[in-house]
Length: 150
Image (tube, rainbow, N blue to C red):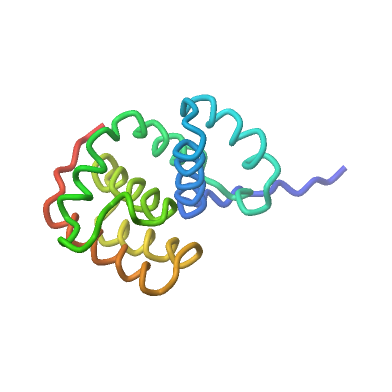
């Protein structure tokens, strides 16, 4: 038999979306990230067409940073203007900002690439005004971010 081997498209974009969805689920349910990760892989990544080309290595790296996220909210709040309150932002917006910040802090991805990717992703979930807000906050955060090599 002649089988065509499918070359996997190792998409970091899909990994970022999946990481945001996993964080969203974690925030909604309060479950342990490892439990969510196992369920996420079984119920979404292995069966969902959207995640068929996910870069699992990159997804796992992003997820591994979740436990290091204790100061994410503080960092984001420090970069909000006086009229914005982090807790009043839509949950999906908060998750996008947190995962973007994790990538900025712990990965070697160029900062402008990180900002562009998460602004593009925010367009799937948020209106134009909130997407512009995400862009502005990530740009402001990027100017003061301390990167950690892991």
